[in-house]
Amino acid sequence: MDGLLPLWKEKGMTSHDVVFKLRKILRTKKIGHAGTLDPDVDGVLPVAIGKGTKVLEFMVDSDKRYIGEVTLGIATTTEDASGEIIEQITISPGELDEAAIDQALATFIGQIQQVPPMYSAVKVKGKRLYEYAREGIEVERPVRQAMIHSFKRTSSVTYENQMARFSFEVHCGKGTYVRTLAVNLGEQLGYPSHMSQLTRTLSAGFQAEAAVTLAEVAELQVASQLDQVIQPLETGLSHLETMHLTDQQWSQVQHGAVFRQSDWPVQSYPVVCYYQDQAVAIYEEHPSKAGLVKPKKVLRTEV
Image (cartoon, rainbow, N blue to C red):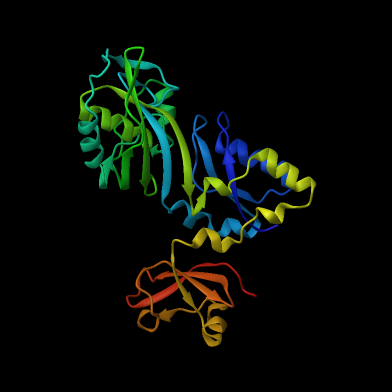
């Protein structure tokens, strides 16, 4: 069994839990996922099976979309609703100006810098940040770049229990911490805040409408109908530039040939090479020989 599966991860499970359960359902070990989702977050989790795992690293680099909720008035250790409260203030009904919120949201559009949360899997000196956090150790965290394509409010502000809340939608690039976006937005507005809910609606080209739950996968497996939801590995490469090979080029690619960049009519790399409508290899600029391109990943040697 080879291909990609748009899975809907439910709350309460880690991404690793999903892979573990899928291995039992599908009776195969070669399964991986593209882009971790926290246990409290539900949504689209692209899963690769068999030869589909060859494209996982490229799927992780794709854009993501999320819908969620920001709560103002409380900050937490984890920047989401699962953490302990570290700051709390009272917000009165009607206190927030929605126009000011929208203006603040707009300032995050484009390339921004983020400091990963202490409760995250980023490694510092060979150790994950959440391990330091659990030990009560504060360490200097690396500043990361993130691309925000859009960030907008999708509901009116509501007030309850001396807090304020509103829903949002964000379209972002790889490696973006939406929790941190919620915290930074609150800081810009002058309030402690946290991300109180999050759902991923798009990842690696897969939208929420196409995703299936673990229970549905199990039912399809029993009915021998998994082909209804398993997508070809090409689906996970749709965000990359493509090139169609001639017969001669395909013969060379099969043997890992290096080509002159000037002979390839493409504008950016990596590029997916197709032969007979199948993705067969991914090429990149040669790291040490200017003007040449080399195979980064061979996907198929036969079609």
